[in-house]
Image 1 (cartoon, helix red, strand yellow):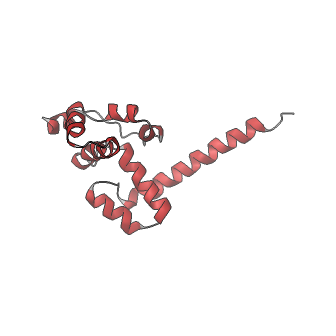
Image 2 (cartoon, one colour):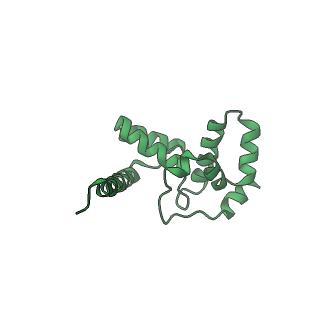
Image 3 (tube, helix red, strand yellow):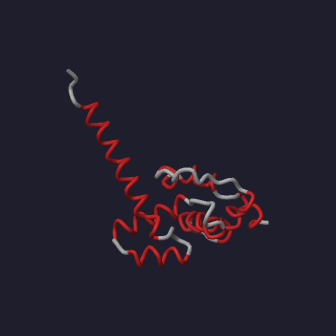
Amino acid sequence: MIHGEILAQQYSTDMYPSTGDTSDHTTSSKWVPLLLHQLLSGLVRDDVKSFAISNAVPQALRPRSVISPVVLDVSVEMDQVFESCWLVDELSQLGFSVSYDEVPGISSLCYRMASLAMCVIIQHALPSG
């Protein structure tokens, strides 16, 4: 039943999930199929662990049609902190990360978005005239 619910779920792959999708458990829990959420909340007592596993399962089941917010964030953060292609690929093989091939594009997009946001903040802070 859970397998069928994950396969039937509509996921957007048009754009990467925002950081708000992973930091806000309410938003992210809407991303997880109901039956999977109920199963894991009964099996795993720790909410953070249940949340992480519930994001990894659809990604593992549908790797080409799902971009899990948590799995994506883990990939980028592990690359930024440890700068290890091996670590990201190992986590990817275990289902807790996207492959290292996807990380540079995501990281550069995040860097450009952060730079753009900083430029907007600076422009608003400067006196006009």
